[in-house]
Length: 106
Image (tube, rainbow, N blue to C red; front, side, top):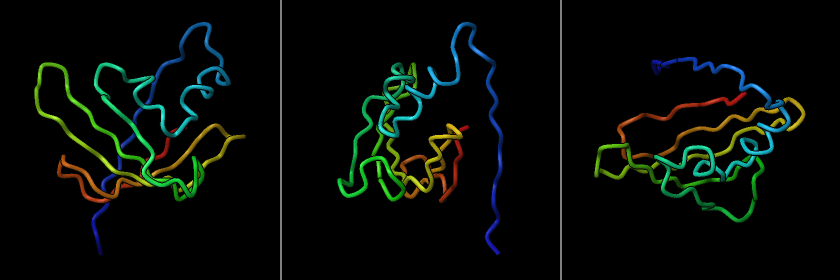
């Protein structure tokens, strides 16, 4: 059986920002550079067939502050729950050495 790593990231509430306002930004599967502009160089659509629906694939390039090394990640949208303001995606390829993983944004 394949070992599965699990982790949890929590955030604090932003004063004056409603969940709907946050979701307007975070709910766009291709918008990583909008909310991580200091590290995400680009986030682009790889598949045109799904357009932000399950099955969509994105390719992201990043660079960490103080580093000149570029990293990339290719992941697939597994589920999108607009009403619940969450989505789940799986990392399918990357340059950082991660194995396949599932991630859920809530």
